[in-house]
Length: 225
Image 1 (cartoon, rainbow, N blue to C red):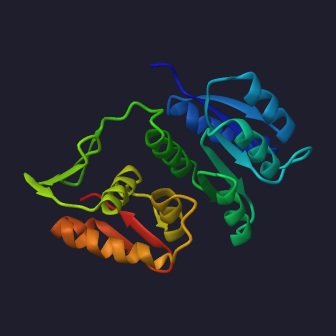
Image 2: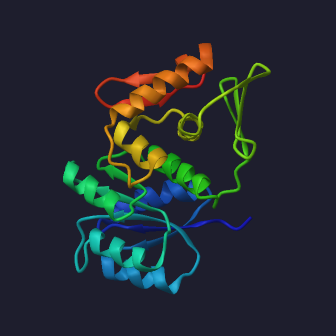
């Protein structure tokens, strides 16, 4: 299979090199741009970019404008990077169709894990339709969950929630990220709906439900046994 191309856009060369080194080790091809205009030139000259890692604060054209321009023509997954931790920025990113939003400083390993999860979710990585984690076997095509030979009956959203947890195992997930990825961007409900669904999911998974850990004040993380 051909290596997927990732476009990394950041005006800091050190940051681009750090991200590139980790992505190359994970078998991706990496293209780089140091400003928004260069990013758009590369994106529209290449018709096979699988994902864009995009900084917000850049010269010539900021990340918001780059995102708007790309979204006019493409649904390519976009991960937005920012040095600011501002809820308004995050909301604006999700309204523009950003797939992930990561604040600096961040762990390159976590960034690579999230890139992999997004590419699997958008079917760009050849992922097995059957996922196994800590004794839970999940068949996405059959919409089936099996634990110790027993089929577990889950609602559609409970199933999607479990898929998201299993594809992001070991990663701390905020309630907002869960809402944006499982309920999609047009959901305007209360983030507490996550707590209700997690409670039901844990109950249905029995002892395996203990793998879904609560991160107080933030969200949840699936830790495999």
